[in-house]
Image (cartoon, rainbow, N blue to C red):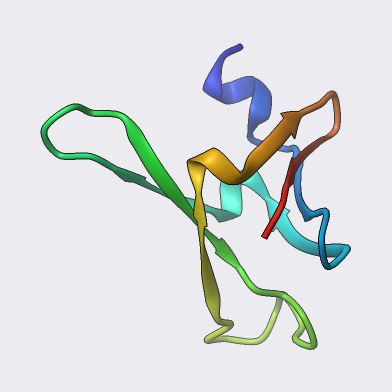
Length: 77
């Protein structure tokens, strides 16, 4: 799968049932030595509008991703 194919997928927390925007809204943290993906920084949209400035971010360890599906990326917090 190419990065361009997962950009529009919604990031969903299975535990809380919360939505964290599209993958393009996330930042990727890499291990400097190995280049492996360590975590994603996703917006915490709970109780805030996407259009307000300064919404909080949540660090999502790469291992917590359960499934990258057709329309969404599901993780367990």
